[in-house]
Length: 164
Ligand code: PNS
Image (cartoon, rainbow, N blue to C red; front, side, top):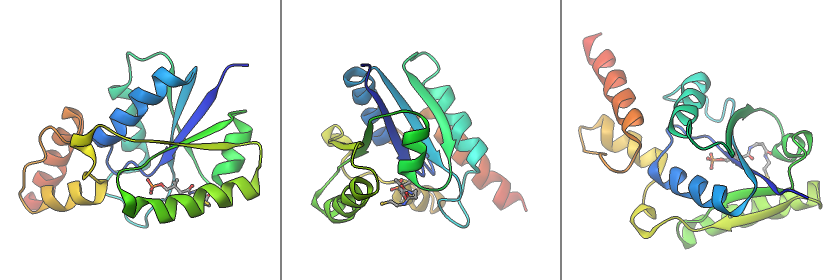
């Protein structure tokens, strides 16, 4: 049976840490679905459509990477897609507690779905979407930490804000 994995997240924005995990997942599983959560935050920087568009563009040449959006319970989405694995990235010990809680809650909700944790390359272990937004908005460099398309979109957003 082919192994179909779901990599869920807010991806606001997609970072090179996410890209690294997706590339690793695409090598390990037959197919990986990047599932972007609708309404993850009340006021995301990037709309759901933008987040999906960016991820689709970044993985356009990888046939076993699909990008989709979901709302509601993750395990319901996983079941609907007939997937069997949830992939989550673990950067540091600080991620562990919440990820452990979510994995066990998801297992309680659907025992047939297994959560698999993957470690990104060391150079990405300190990156988070939240830090990227903060650093960029305050004028810091994020080059090399996010895909070029994300950097360009961040620049457009900040330019639009300052033009107002
Ligand atoms: O990128 P994030 O914000 O860390 O991703 C969190 C995400 C999307 C995996 C989590 O919030 C989620 O699964 N939300 C869907 C609602 C749900 O199923 N909640 C119960 C999880 S135990």
